[in-house]
Image (tube, rainbow, N blue to C red; front, top):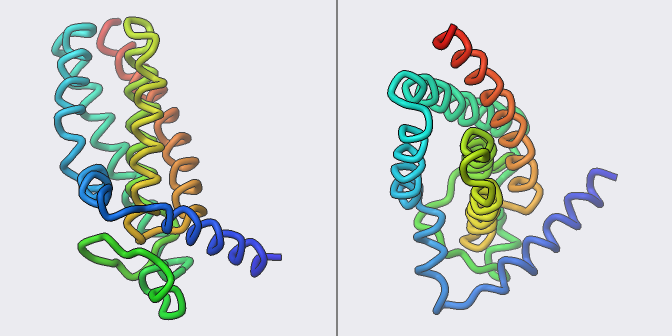
Length: 188
């Protein structure tokens, strides 16, 4: 059963990865780059500050830093525990896939990019949803796009991305609750 699931995952990867065209490669390389989201984070930080003030913003920053650290470290624990090679490391896939990324890590299950971006989307979307009701949807779209970019550039299977997004969503919600608890301690 696991072998069949992995085969479906490989087939879906090849289909999604081969949808790419050279004209779009630069765009998806930009999306997948870890620093491309910094302008979005700065805008969100300004919105949080305007909505919550300095003290609460500091609590949000500490919770976000802990969340991203937890997300990355948990992803690394899974990567080195499961040790599933990335598609760009599979010799039989290399001739039939598009590899656009600048590098290829060793193991891919699950995607830290997908986990961290979904954690941030859920966490920040929940914090700002009262003032900006559409923002959670925009952030979820951004996180899913970033997840897809990992498949497009050839470094993750769809299961890596979906698992990462699921774990990130859970972490984003848990750290949102932690941040709420921290906010209640500051205001009381």
